[in-house]
Picture: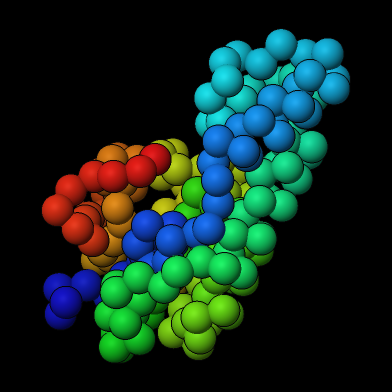
Length: 179
């Protein structure tokens, strides 16, 4: 770890396992589209999220997703990598596809807040992973350069985000899983 000036973690699937039924979230987001009489691009949650701004539904779609994430953060399971977080001496951040408030709730629930210097969620900056902006914002707030930071995550989206940001990447497990 001496090669880095900062380390950034993904949240869900990396530090905690949010207690969220993503199929139920997709159904609730679909209901937002149906209530507005707007055809969604697909029934895929992330497709609907990406199209929400153009459909004039960004605020309602975000609220529907965030409500599930907030609840799921309160009952999230702590994962083994959270213990590694507590042992780090480097500036540390969280960069997540989950909303910032859900990240903070999960960190609070598992007594991890003091170990994290910066939290950037889906709603913290203008884009979300795999766009590099959220990770770059996290690294910047930690006072590090991208080439001197490490991003630890569980998904191919996390790896793609790191590559786009010019940040080294490490999987928490044997390879990609999840979103």
